[in-house]
Amino acid sequence: MLSQSKLLLQQVRVIDPLSDTDRIADVLIVGDRIEAIESHLDSIPQDALVYEAQGLILAPGLVDLYSYSGEPGHEERETLASLAAAASAGGFTRVAILPNTIPAIDNPATLALLQQKAESFFEVGSHHSSLSPLSLHFWGAITLGLEGQQMSEFADLAAAGAIGFTDGRPLKNMGLLRRLLEYVKPLNKPIALVPVIESLQGNGVMREGGASINYGLPGNPTVAEAAAIASLLELIAATETPVHLMRVSTRRGVELIADAKARGVPVTASTTWMHLLLNTNDVASYDPNLRLEPPLGNKEDMEALIEGVKQGIIDAIAIDHKGYTYEEKTLSFAEAPPGAIGLELALPLLWERFVESDEWSAIDLWQCLSARPLSCLGQPTLSCTPGNPTELVLFDPKATWTVEQQTLKSRCTNTPWWGKKITGRIVSIIERTK
Image: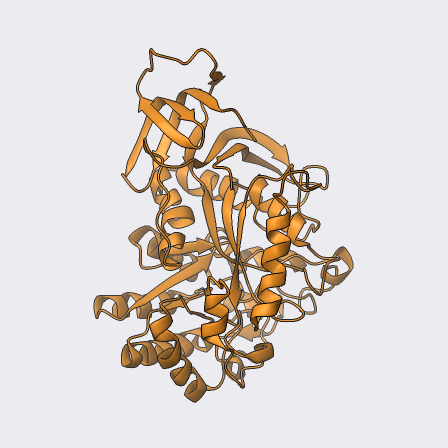
């Protein structure tokens, strides 16, 4: 992490999604503020650290809408410290943690304990102080114990600092859901729902279609997501409570959301990064690290999601980082628990796939990894313009590295890119002092 009271980045590529700019410039940072951005800065403070940044990218920090922490309850998978280190290494300056911990984050006491733990990483003299000052936020549970039966105390969780409310899993009781949408509306906190009808998905482990038949794996039908989205959109329209739909993974889901937005329904949506890069054809390897929930879509699903992100129908890309131990994940595809890590991998792989191919602009990618996630959370957008505080990342799109234990900060190795060489890596995070 670059830390200097005065820092000059010379001829760096500056990407700012808020002002929709992408240019080469000299950037002067003084303290925790961007002092100047000019094509060439002639007046350089004598005590400034001058950093030759040709070929590097300076942009606002990335924001993850939802990921899992193993702590508390499954520290052998991932601790808050290892999660924070992985996030920082991947260019994320803000991560929202799902409430699916043990115990669940369904009360102010548990929330306060995790907030205190997160803040301790960055205290002066802390043995975690080498971490960048990442902001960890926590979702409060919608229902007690994530059991879908009784509402949590939303007002208490909101007052304690919950970023919003979700169970991180589908809610079966639609009557309860209607009441909670009405109850939570005055709090002006985001509520995120997982659109799945579990009785329709059955024991499916991959998206239903020709590939699932060929591979001999139980299929999870598109209608399990589409029917849930349709029902939820009706509830959202009736209550007029803004809702975020998580983990959208099907073409039909994109179509339904596009129609709802055109009608003025207050809905935002996200898909996960892996659903943009892979599809059911990739499951031919039977790699258990491709066992996800929701499952990877068919090729037409992936194509619709890619177009949906570019058009803004799908507002944001989430990482949905979920670590497992080697023993937990090293099973047959159908038996492996769903989930994969991604905080350190998402930016370079998305950049290489979409920006290097000119399918998306660099601004497009930063919109859905930084600006729009903040908007979904009801937070102000970060900006890389003079006068703004420094919450920035320095990214080298040409750096190559191998995904292995020595190069990852996460405790976990459950990724289909394990052992592979990828291009693009974060050089540094430049962030204001907390």
